[in-house]
Image (tube, rainbow, N blue to C red; front, top):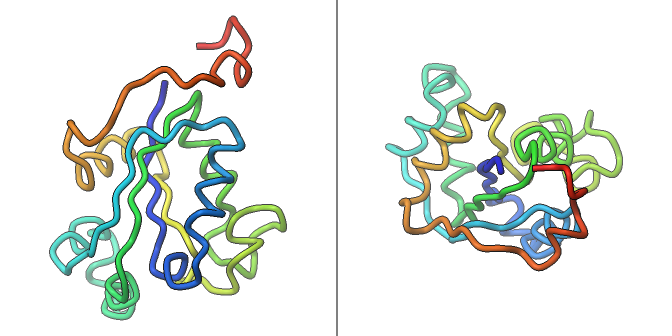
Length: 153
């Protein structure tokens, strides 16, 4: 099974949407393998957003990500990265399709509710950034046989 990282951003935490967003992932059939609330700081944000750290908008991005705690989720499922990215929708909430997380809850490019890993390779890197190995759990979810076909692994 593939694992991916989701961060419920301060815009999600402050708007009391955490439970609703987590419920969407669970109802889809994805398994929560790890979950924790944490306060991000500038060093982790510079690492996480290294590709944006030199952009003029980075200080605003960093400030918005430190405005409150975030909730980090390790989510598991077949093709979890692609499934989660589809569920989250376009980065800019105004452009995100209705029915996606951002399309239903965001009107912003920056205050866009969630971060989701963009590739299986980045998911592995990002999961290690936000979780220690012992914070990600491997367990048999009771609904597994009713989420996937018997020939899907």
